[in-house]
Each structure stands twice: as C-alpha cells, then as structure tokens.
Length: 343
Image: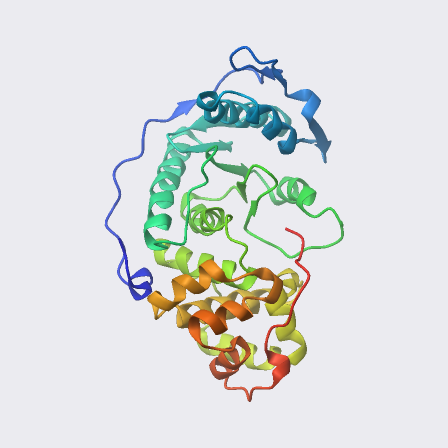
C-alpha cells in the first residue's frame, strides 16, 4: 500500500491481474425483480421518463431491498441495477448491449473487444484508485460500478439533464459521475484511449462519494488520480499559458466561487481554471500524506474545508492559494461558510 502521496503522482503502479470473465445480457428488460418470498419490485412503476430515458426511483428500490433478508440484499440490488439498465438499453436503441464483469456493468454500443477492454480497465482502475488513495477511497458497499457510454453528445446531455433539475445551461463535460441513489458514470463514445481518462476520473469520484468533501478537493483528487493512472494530462494549454490565465482570472470574487464549487459550473475559462487550480492545490497539499489524509477525511463542503485545513494542516486555505498564485493575501481569499451546490 502506498503511504506517501508523492508515490501517488510518481511512478506507475504494477499491472493488476486480468479482469474476470465478461457476461453479455441479451435478454428482454424485466418488468419486475423478485427475491425470495417478498412481493416483487415492479420496475416500470418506479421509473419515470426524462427526455425519453427511464430514470429509476432509487429511494423506492432501497426501501424494497431493506426489508429483504440480509443475505438477499446485495444480489437483489444488483438485479434492480441490471433491470434498469436493460430498460435504458431499449430506450437507447439498436446496437446497445449490457455487459457485466465481476465488479462492473457497462451499457454501450461498442464492439465486443472494445467493451471487454473497457470492463477490464474498469476492474483494474477500481483496485488502483483504492490502492492509490490509501485510507481515503472506498468501494461502494452495494451494487456494481456502472458505466453508460452514449453514442453522441446530444443523447449524453439529454440524459444528464435530470441531474440538473433547475434546467438552463451547464458546462461542457467529457463525463460525469451521477449519484442519485445509485452512483454511475456516463460518457460519450470515443476510442478506448479517450474513454480511459474519463473512467479513471469518474471512478475516483465514486470512491470518494462517502465523504462530504468540498468540490474543489473532490475534483483535485480526481484530476491528479486520473493523470497518475492514465498518464494523460488533458489540457491544450502549456503550463506557462495556464499560469498566465490563472493569474488573470482569480480575484477575491472569483476565488469564493472556487471554494463554494460554483466556479466548476462556469461556462467560460473559469471552468477549466477551477480544475487546474484544484489539481495544483491538491498536489501541493498532498506532499505531506500523513497530514493530508486526515484533512481529506475531516474536510466538509459547508466551509470549503477551511476548519479541517486549520486543524490538520495548520494552514489557512486562502493564504495557501495566494502563495501558490503569488498573490498578496487578504481575508476575502479564504473560504467562508457556503450553501452546498446541487449535485
């Protein structure tokens, strides 16, 4: 196990064992899920339509599973996941297939060899994220890791709109982790080398979902882990260009958006610069892993992680970011209590 985060962003880890066999579910979408002697869970009655896609009422699913005998609950939850994905498969149209490995489910219109490779990468990445973020990342105790690969951006954005109940515009993205009772990752179809960074990034979010951390810390961990595991840097700008953009953009007003998380939803360069600043800040703070790990475990979105930084790192986050930007510190650069942004 890694004990220093400098190893996290250093040499690549050894190759993990081969992924378990893959099963393709070429069956009709079930109308109900049964388990033991309990009344069946009626899938259609607990889904609603959103932009033509079935969205599961996961709270209702959880209530049904919770009354089952303990030894049936895990398999029953996975059965509901499969059932929902088969209904979504039918809504997405011809060519989409549901395939499954030991820990993962994939819904996509990919060639068999590409689908198998994606599932293998997911299996390896899940183990590597947990090993890399030692003591921080946690595998979700129920269900499987789910990846849905849409054929085009239009269908992708129509689907993810249900995660933005307020409507309106939202920032472009190559992938997203949606945690609405059943966490799952979504992305757009590309060649496998382009999908892999999205899987690593979003799977990291999934392994951090148990923590109430601020968005900047969540994204900083995800970007650094993505780059660590795939070697993809992901920016069209040089480090010098990004540095100049950072210095021009951040101010007492915009940094408050960074701490609260709202800057990550901007439609301008503030979106890109938020991810980059989060990456820089997390990489710097994580040099002392012994102090950084307790900070992550204690950080809370309500104050942007400010109290945890004082307690665990002996640092003011505003002073720290000002030092990294070469900016004179003022109290307005430090986080203050925030209302949580919508997930």
